[in-house]
Length: 156
Length: 282
Image: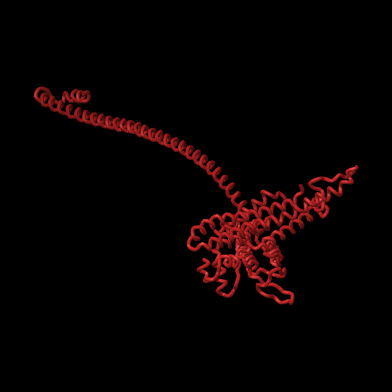
């Protein structure tokens, strides 16, 4: 338990270790700690910022989707209207075409009927003349009454 | 463990005495260095405690130096995280106590805390292991806990003491240092009839303050030495009990674990407080 040289030895050892700690151990460790603190701080701030911009982006996306939906509805409405229009147009075209064909048919029928009538008339007059000839052959001279008969046939 | 130690003839007293004896080498008057006959000789080195102390100091320097070398602000390794916990703890303690700027106080606190902790921790190695091994290779004495040697604790507290004086003089000047020793706690009168009493008051102040100053290193070292020596002695006494020592040893080791850490912390904390007092004007 005597005090001896060990005391001085220990004092020197301590000063050496402390000096080494001051020189090589403490500064890099503390620098690393402070650096990391700063990094974590920055990271947290960046995360906050990211969250904020995410919220903003989500709102923006909602807005865009809403607008697109509105546009789509508009386009759909327009398309419906156009379709209706086309259908209506088609209908009126059809009616017109039907009318045209109908009138054309009617005209043809009439023409045909006229022609038939003309023919018929011709035949009737021929028959009438023939029958009249036959009658007249018996009673009168055909030559004397030919002009009357011709006039008659023309009137018919 | 006394009986197991193979010293059948040893009495309890001898066993205890053996455990408390340092391995010493000293320079005798003829100029020779001799082993273990050194009582009363100042030129003695306690080879065992000194050696363990330096060995543990080197372990501290190696471990923390390696961590410091590899330290990066990125993702730390587990070992670096452990070192950083200790560093942050010391740094926090320093910042709580000392508000100025000092390049010395924090590294000093770290060195003291870890080193004293390692020295104290040697107490938890069963008391017979290392002395027995040393005996096998022919070393007669081996005291493994450096902080149970009063030379070691005094050595550290005297280094702290000189640092206190150095920083007082550095920050307050020689005048300030002398003023601190002589002008407190009673301010001497500077004029009038009281001037006659001034030398007396200064002498009184000096007496008080120098005792207070000297008490710092003495209390610092004796506190650590007393705690560790008593703890070690109780471990030795428990080791004398034979088989019953096991539960007792376990309980005392658990309790001692607290003392080991606490004493290291107290030594560091008081050093920080003393040095911040030396650096701050009050």
